[in-house]
Length: 222
Ligand code: SAM
Image (cartoon, rainbow, N blue to C red; front, side):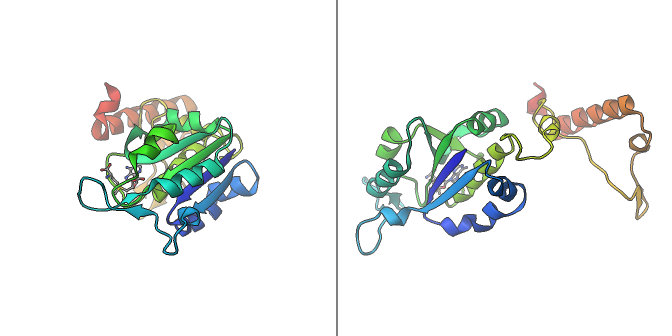
């Protein structure tokens, strides 16, 4: 799978793309991520990528010319062009899984007040939000989307089973995890986990999932 990210802040993704599971996924060739500085498609000597909004208002808006040029250069037939934005479709495991099956994604990160609407109307196929809060720019949102979908690419996670036991997979949050030592500063691991009785462990874990979900995200149980 190939992903192209268009951003004003390419260096924000430096460590993200080389570390941990994602770094290994890229190294193994299962995923290729290219990060592009939007300013390379500006044409004036100040490399201007934004301008004041028509109709007034605070902040600046990304100009159409460099964004159109960037997308038109990077897009390939059948690719999905996505704008990261708080008023987009909320990111979910289902959406991440669906996007992981695409051959090529072009991710556009906005800044300031957002981007010229004509970009959204013409060269964007889908708009995605990573949550009901507002970031200063979309670069971290693009990173979150890449991380969430990369887990669904076969071979990236190593242990595919963890995909089926994570929070949200069954509309339940995850159960508590423990590792060695069994006793630490007077705190013991629940006896059941040391019992070797897998059926009882499953039952205990499920009960903890329901308990946690009821406490923290009762909306998921409806
Ligand atoms: N004026 C916009 C609004 O109210 O919807 C917010 C613009 S925000 C300050 C700047 C950029 O950050 C956006 O263009 C978008 O790319 C990114 N961004 C901020 N919050 C986001 C979120 N929750 N999900 C995805 N992208 C986000």
